[in-house]
Amino acid sequence: MKSAIKTILAVIGGFVIVIIAISIIVALYAGGSKLDFGDKVAVIDIKGVIMDPRAVNTALSEYARRDDVKAVVLRIDSPGGAVGPAQEIYREVQRFRTKKKIVASMGSVAASGGYYIAAGTDKIVANPGTITGSIGVIVEFMNTQELFKKIGLKGTVIKSGTFKDTGSPLRELTETEKKLLGAVVNDIHSQFVEAVAQGRNMKPEDVAVIADGRIFSGAQAMRLGLVDQLGSLEDAINEVARLAGIEGRHSVIYPQERHGLLKELLGVDASNYLQNIVSSTRIMYMTELLR
Image (spheres, one colour):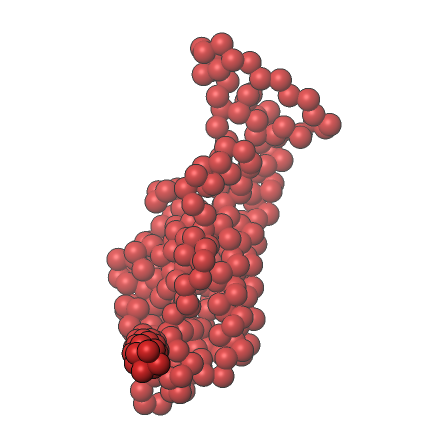
């Protein structure tokens, strides 16, 4: 009996050792393990509508502290998003730049808020056909007043101030409200222009000329000084490694997926995003063409 138990325990122990060994090998080949002692370049994905900066900023903060990570590539595939989150990521990128090198790699689209973030990096690499630019601000409201009349619905609003229900779907905007919102949009737009000018070492007046919401291809953006280099993600990785002074072989790592991380990198799930649109007003760094 004791012999049988010993045999079973030995088999289980051997199985556990094999599983651990396989896990270590997979981690090493995936390039995401601290057991790989070479210099590393980390890639952080920014995908979809930008609504929550926490996952990206947490990854930037972690990689800024890690001695084995010498540089970061932001892989941006986003049409933009909410103003606040884009600005928070931009500021975190600038903080990261004081410690290590960071390069933006543009995928199919890196426009509006996506470009805002890219402008804060040391260098921008885009594909010739990347859709980028769209330097501008947009705020939209839905007016359901006529629809409600047709189906016999009527809304009642009780408010504490004249402008508290600005943007309500139950009525048209007044001219005064349009002017107030226009002033807010223009102020946030000037913040966008200033951020691009600062990040790209351009004059604000030169940025303002092309900051009318228009989109550009990656090739056009390069001619305008909005992009530094045409190339792929691999090109961006090699370039940031060069900027960081990495010699010889370097491994590439990605943030480990945790519960909820993928959803945070994508922004929000579709149901919550639609609910946010319906229930609140959002001023966006968003390219309208790609929504």
